[in-house]
Length: 450
Image 1 (cartoon, rainbow, N blue to C red):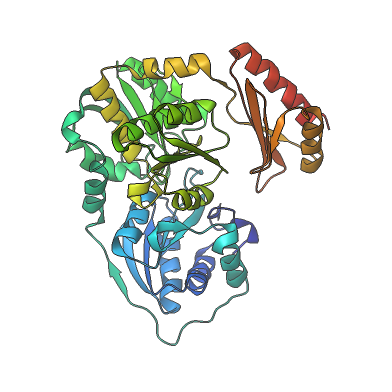
Image 2: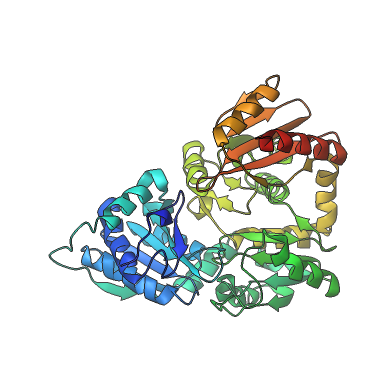
């Protein structure tokens, strides 16, 4: 049995297949999952990785042996599992996936009723403790297994309800599924909208033969940035491996930052629903806050991470939330994140506005100068944060998630990694790109001076 304690992370379970977790370990995780959640009905899906059929089958065996009934969803994007759990009234659900990681990884994302996520401090750590101890023992009577073959159509129906499909027309769009799970649902979507699509790597293939399914890394989106220009497309959309995130390329081949997309989507949604609360993560550009206020909404800045964002959305009844990392969440989708809904919304925005995406974000790029996230390896995280507190003592400090320091025309956040001796910097200036770069380098020098 292989089960490394390091696979139990802040937001999910993830590690190298065979080296850190194997089928016997996954079976133990399944039993512990039922013990921690108390679930009687569980939905389980899996991504296309070569290890996923075996890990999924083992996880299901564990759930069944713990006495819970399982609906096997088969191949499913992560957001499809969220939808299935909420729609079907399941007590819990799991999707076997390693998200955007390379092919050698495996793992699981887990939720309870209503698609509320488990995290390190709300279940995952306890699952790890029980699984590593070989507990609990099997139940006297195992659960029963069934399948759900109609999930894909119901999921696509639900997502199409967020837009007016007939309004999406006249666009040429490059679609890059990276051989991940978006390729499962995109063909069904394309049957329902009038799109001049250039489909790329839609065939799900767990080897990810063309590029890793992580569009946040520049090398993984180089293909789509080039393809958009070569194809004369109006837009490019790329998805990560489990398809719960999407990323956008404007018609000039320029990557659109996740906080700018959050601003555009927030404005679009608020124009439709009226004054509402929108949650966003504290790394984001002030463009998000200003767009929400400008559209009559209430901005709510909160800590990074899908488990925190989803709970916060429920607390304030937020209609929408966005993270810099490309996660977009919707109240009417069980407060869960989706990679398809924002893609459809952006297509509708472009088709109905007649304005190129580059022009939509040009005013944001001209006013808000953002560094993007920059990682620094440090020997002593606490000492580095102390240096920042001292050096920027005249700024306004907040400790919601790491250290945030705010001045009138610039601000930054520095967050420790959950798993590595890293500090992650996000900085913004309203003065100029040069001012942002100068301040960025200054803050990095303080972080790294040890």
